[in-house]
Length: 408
Ligand SMILES: Nc1ncnc2c1ncn2[C@@H]1O[C@H](COP(=O)(O)OP(=O)(O)OP(=O)(O)O)[C@@H](O)[C@H]1O
Ligand SMILES: O=C(O)[C@H](O)COP(=O)(O)O
Image: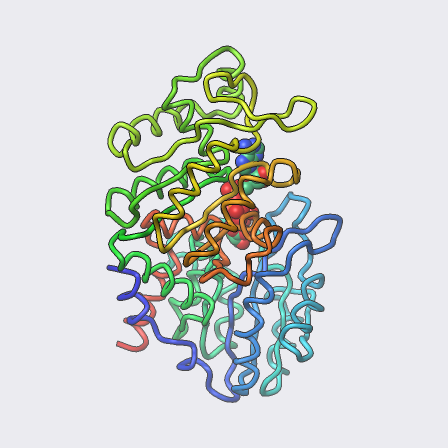
């Protein structure tokens, strides 16, 4: 089913906003956090509107979200996110240091119309990070404890839509469910791209999510959803190794260290099939006491950005399109010196209809001063690239099942 058709089949949030009812809302405010501080609040800003709409409609909102993964440095309490939500929703948010235990349930029961209660990081529950089919997730502690207190479920967390986790797919099995505005916007924007059947659609694919990106490139080209692809970042490195056979000792070591060998093979297959549509870097920037550009055949260390000639070539690709999808940076943007390729191409792409996604890509667009000019800024990272790759999101599947069951 095409994405646009999917959106039409899913109940819109207004259907779940009934004054006085308890609505469980899953959002994704997972943000880059260092030393307990949120570095970028883009996702929080995006979801603020959802919560404001719910509050204005007089529903009792119970908000489920996660931050980080257990064991990682950014696995923190959502108390850190509360002031940001309050700032953007422009109303007080209650927070409870509990997910589905007696205290959380007591506070849900005491909610008044229009109030918003943020529950603690849902990934504190070990079961939340286990992916299983929706029917099994409906039997989890989280869903068993919270669903009986709720009347509706709203799924708005596009960025986590690719996870078959209890807070994503469990509730739609037992509660009438709707899609939230963030999720709906994402599906419509990507659906509109697919509708173009490739005409004038260019993909700039970089970053570090190599297997996901290879899959997306393959799907998009196979289905004629894009006209041309230009690859940078670590993805571009893998394609360059595949195209030019760059396997001197240093590059071989880099490829082995990164575990890129199977990806190089896959890239080679893609080039054999769609070589005329895939643009591969012809030079790279490397660190040698500063930034210097080297021709691909002289490459003998890990590249950190695409080089000047490649930037010019990729700008020509951008010029030929009227929609540009930008997924993943062209280089190591954490160091400004190696952000040039990404920044220059983002600026060129912003003159077109620019669709971008991924935390680092958004950060780069902010750096380039073009975030406000983008046609669509996706809140998804992996979810964005997987949707481009044509994968069916578990959240979509569960919501379709729910719609059939509760609103046939
Ligand atoms: N040539 C390169 N060498 C080293 N790192 C690179 C290179 N090109 C890109 N990267 C790194 O890739 C990462 C971003 O890739 P990723 O695919 O995660 O992007 P994203 O989807 O925009 O971000 P996120 O995963 O945060 O949503 C950054 O840390 C960037 O420094
Ligand atoms: O940041 C993301 O991509 C989403 O919040 C999903 O996070 P996850 O990859 O840890 O499931």
